[in-house]
Image 1 (tube, rainbow, N blue to C red):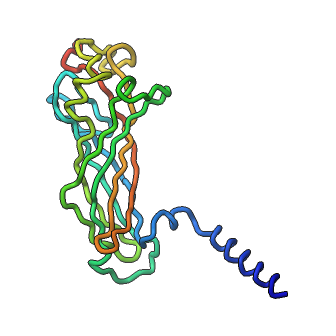
Image 2: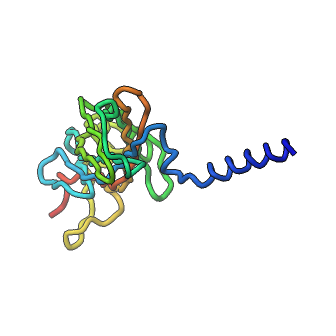
Image 3: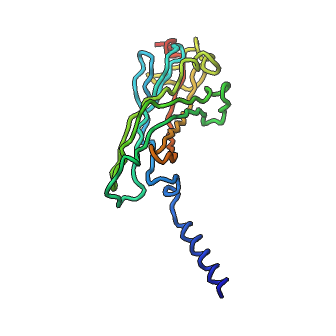
Length: 209
């Protein structure tokens, strides 16, 4: 009988664990972090900020992205917070891939890059509130424009029809996957969040008007 009771308790525990949603098990803190938005900020003249980054490979200039990061609580009933729970952004990684499956780094897409954040800290919220930070990162480094595959685009005019870029020779589109890493200040518990946005590479300085 005791054995059956023990099995019942274990079974109940397993059942309850299975009812916990994935988002609540993402980390050991009481905080969730998300990438709420990404906006491209090209370094070259003539290109504008926006949801899509148009990276001019002819100019050896860094292209940036503004990453909007939010933190909020797993438990919305919490009514107080403490500096001990503050979250500090530490680093990020940018990885490129293409939707056609050709995503070999250094051949089909630029190499992934990593970088560190300067002091950026979240004051943790209470209840259903959230706290937001806009963090600027290098999403295309100038050295990548002098390495394959980006250097292969230099001198090739992308095709434009009625003001729209036509995919083909001289232009290719990638998805930049940005992962942001952070830690709680005192417990050092890790958090991370990932977002994606589109990056279009071409020699825009050589574009036929």
